[in-house]
Length: 66
Image (tube, rainbow, N blue to C red):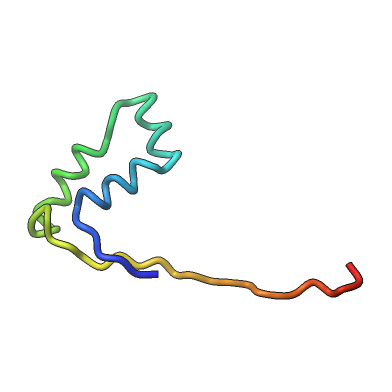
């Protein structure tokens, strides 16, 4: 799978992770600091970069005996 995200799209995705939610509950929100760290490397908050996820499928069919 492939998409093109700006920096805010990436941060919104990270905000859905359960590990981030647990960290936020105990320590505060790490995402604003991460945004500031990534921004110079992203070359502008609205720049869109390719984001890719490997996608693996296992397909099969149940036998009619089951």
